[in-house]
Image 1 (cartoon, rainbow, N blue to C red):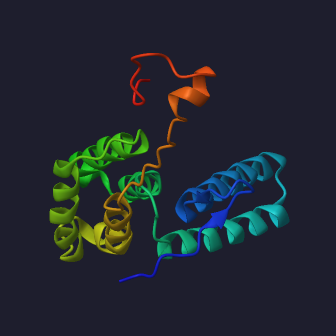
Image 2: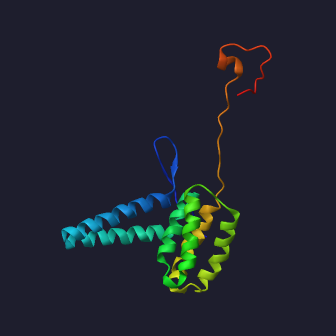
Image 3: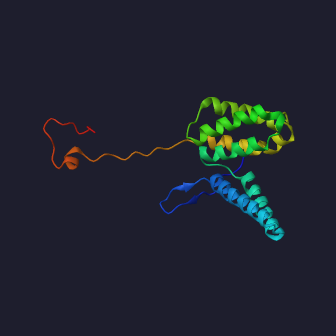
Length: 172
């Protein structure tokens, strides 16, 4: 089992999913490679390819800490599958869309867990076998519990300046 990577922290104390951060860096590097190819600069192209390769290696080993990070991995896995696995890739993209929107479903999680052994046994070809560890990490990220912190409302007397006769302290 992979160990979760330390998540980066923004200035306000919120953690960034390492997969989301790596995916953003990878998109920027791919755009840079595209721009360098248009300029026909072989040196910058080689540097961009090396950067993309290093980022892909880090992404392969990354463990998402949220459903959004799991969605990023599922999108990458769906893109890696060949034409004979189109239906599976479509289903992975559908699950990734739901996870990206914050919708987590038990049916999706069960499907992903049943798919992992099939990838490991090469039922989806070499591409499926190669991305099987990423699918395991995506399942781990999708299964992360979601914590919701609620702020307590101030008492009614402080909120209205004075207490009202017959008012309930729990009134919103």
